[in-house]
Length: 99
Image (cartoon, rainbow, N blue to C red):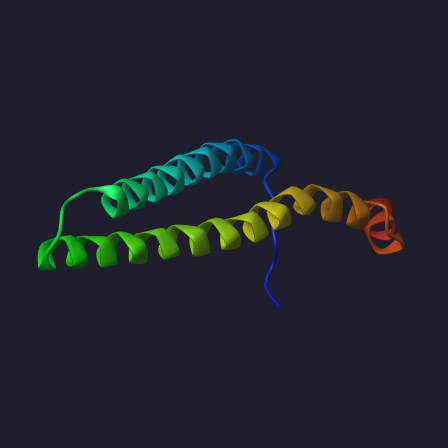
């Protein structure tokens, strides 16, 4: 097993970036749904409409999946600080610090 180094500054930077990414994902997913809704209600018809709508529905599904998985990643990132704190309070960590 390799060495693990957790840089608190990098974790803080990642958490700030995660907030930006989450807002962007939410905005783009909302916009995608809006475009689909508009196209479904428009008088546009034909193969090009159907192809465009199919494409947008795929993009919407992609955004929904990315948002769902991003939430899991963000949860893990937020839990990282707790895990580090918990490890620092273990007897292993205290024994090493006493060396």
